[in-house]
Each structure stands twice: as C-alpha cells, then as structure tokens.
Image (cartoon, rainbow, N blue to C red; front, side, top):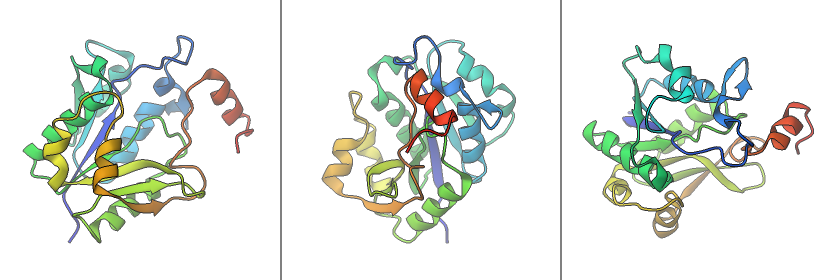
Length: 203
C-alpha cells in the first residue's frame, strides 16, 4: 500500500541573486517555473502546500487558476523572513493535520526535475516509510526532493533559521535515491546561470 503523503513546495523565499528578477517566474516549458513545479506535484494526486511571501505576489498570481483544485493550498507566510524553517514548519503542520505518513519537500527552483523523478521517489519511500529519503544526482551529491517520515513531524515543527532540515537529516540519517543527470541538484540562482542553461552550456 502506498503511503499517504503531503507535498510541500517552499516558495516563500527571495531571489536575492537575480538582479531584480524572480527565478521562480522564469519560464520553463512555456510557463513560470513555480507553476511547472506545482503541476508536477499535483500530478502525484496528493495534497500540495505552496508557501508564498506575505501579501499579494506574482508567485501567487501564477498559481491563480490552480486554486480551484482541491489538492492545492496556497499559504502566504507572515514569517517568511525567518527562512526555510518557516515553510518546513508550515508543511509539518499541514501534514500532521492530514495524518500523512510523510512530507515530500519539492524545491521550486529545480528546472530539470520531471514527473517520473517524483513518482520514483514516492515508490522508493513506500519501501521504507519510516526512514528519510533524499534524492542525489548522478555524481552522488545530495539534493532534492526529500521525503520525511511522520515520526519527524514534531521536530520539523520546531525548526528555526534558514538551513532547512539539514541538521535533522544529519541526526537521523537518510536513504538516498539517485536521479539521472543533475535533476536533483541543478538550481539556477543568477541571470548568468539561467542564460548558460538555456544555451545548453551547463555541465
């Protein structure tokens, strides 16, 4: 039996190195990157929580017509300035309320991630749903998505700072799930990185 999951897309941060552009609104496959990632996550059929900056934002707007889907919740965070921990706490609360077996964290800035990667990770998690599972790239470097079992929700709800769940993963250990190429680690944080990627000049 497949575990019941909640999917978190933490999109409440800033694009501080983009020179005024928003990397989550860069177009990939003819749609904003954040919209693309939400579409991928919704395809799994589990509840999806997208955390957003406080107030009305272009990020929220790009998901506007997805709001009618019962599996998608958009949550502006008044605590977004606290960093990744604010999104993880919200994700843990959301998953706890739904009695989920696991929380899948899908970063919104991985433009090469595909639906088959997410499905593969869910299948791998179902084989040991009490353990953390983390994607790696073809070189073995740890990346995302990450799946966190229900037994860690209480700890997630007390995280602080902008290091995410790094210390928690170190304490509890993680099974790894290799994904092809650099789909688990390729994030593009600068206009130059986006230009190189679009020109096919990344390795």
